[in-house]
Image (cartoon, rainbow, N blue to C red; front, side, top):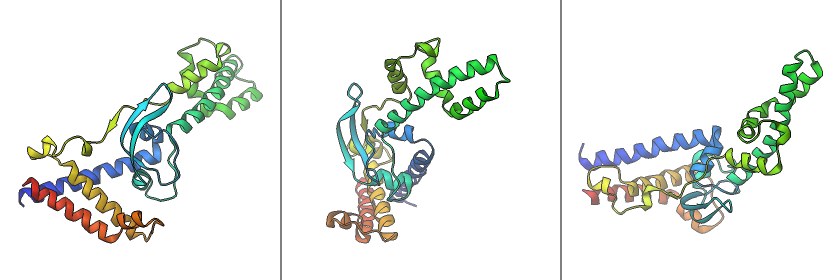
Length: 237
């Protein structure tokens, strides 16, 4: 196996390793996925992929972003109709749960004083799932009676990771220094990612309405992406 073949296999392995990770995050850790990819708003399915993003924490938005349409939704949900929640929607839902958690903590404290009160236990069981969010308030107040709307807002902000400025490796250098030293080349990985995405979309028989997307994710596009990846490997030597 020559050097080009080894590099091509390495780029394929990068795509194959990253894809299952995004699928797992999309199914079980949507808050972490949204923060990792600076996904502020909940988009119509399938969600776009932020190639570059500059978050603004003060105004809870991205000041600048470059998107790849559909890519994140297709990779992380393996579908065209499953929606990925954005950070702003997650923040709003967490705020509601924090409000409920304050009541849950109060009920728990009363239940500890009187464990035999069945009506109290029944009321606590209805809000028990949100009890953990009360710990976000405990760092600010000793008693839930001291909770204010401002503290609830602060606790809600604490419930989600803060997005960092995002620039995926494929847009950083050309060619990347690692490629020149025999390491992974992200342009080749990007071409393979396009090829695999086009093959997946064409394979399931989905045809976008807009001609541009139809060409971008067609069977010929799958072959072009693979050819570009191989050509990139040949160019690197």
